[in-house]
Length: 191
Image (tube, one colour):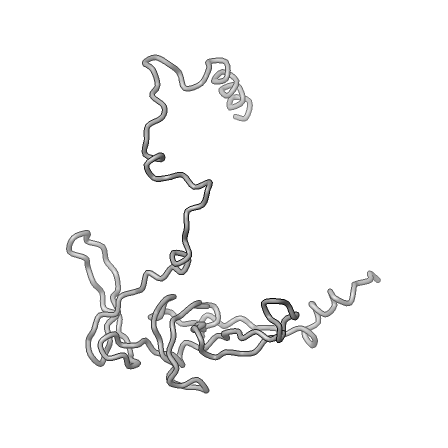
């Protein structure tokens, strides 16, 4: 019999470790109308009436994580950042408990997807429209890294990137002929 360490047994044993069963394909939502960066409002549950921005969409679990909604306390080691040893963490909310906020009146609304063809590019897409008011709800271009973006010391400026620095002479090969011969020999031996 092989010996297994206690910590490994805890990971294997379903009585000790929490096992999250994956959703069946029939339970997963096929057409998602909520994406990362959307302004949504909770329509049922303990946080009913609270609104916030979607931070994460977990399609495999049919859940969304919203800023300052469904917050739970989590114990962490005490440090200078967390002197109390408790951190507030946003927990996921099931997508059926959430509705998009209508941009025209700020109330939760149901959404329908309507096929749309861009007249300039001819590109097909599905647009979201609020059922109550018929307002178009665009998908947000939400990228939080842009808020804190700063060029570093080793970043190349755009003017330097577009500048031409090498102009080959007529008849000049890009590499010496002996290097090209060696590369060709390697290719022949591989084939």
